Length: 241
Image (cartoon, rainbow, N blue to C red; front, side):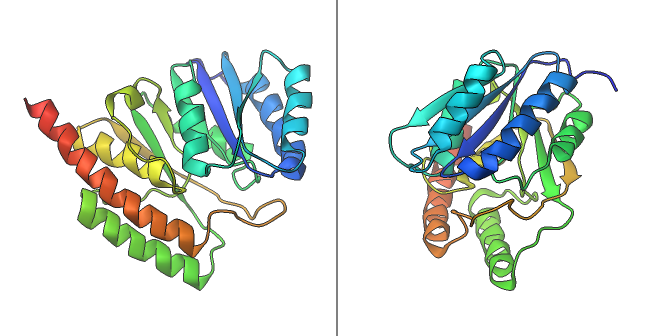
């Protein structure tokens, strides 16, 4: 198998994921060493109160060239953690996986093999073990997204993008889980950027409970859809001047 040549940052946002990181980090470190010419992991500790910081520091000390750690003094949410990771990356390309083990490294490999130089590569899930409530809410939110932004693509899993892309997009989302991916995708689509898609698998968490699948986050997400919609229109207006 040929090595992935573009420089790449793999962002891993983590909030109270110490136990899962003991499994995810060594697998990720081994993968990038074997598969990439120039790849670094950027772990963002989003104000964890467990041993996440300790686990991250131990691995970073063992792999200083491969693992960098950013720390939020308090918990700010998934989108804030991803923002820190995305803007903190210094590579040509950026992608991410959660710290809970739901995206195996085999699925990241599918993304790298599917990449053909696009500005943005999205992923969809072949199957996700969601309950009826979460599946229903997801469909409802997709309808709201399409009405507000015109974005109709499936956007479900991690994504891969050119680091320079986000400097063009004037990102306004800060809070709800998932909103940063929507903003990157919707604005990229409206600007005519090259977007690809590939299908991956989503597994159950290794341990613990999801911290984003709740009504409060969905309400926040709906509010950020509106902010994204307004910003998207302003971006297009400025491009047309």
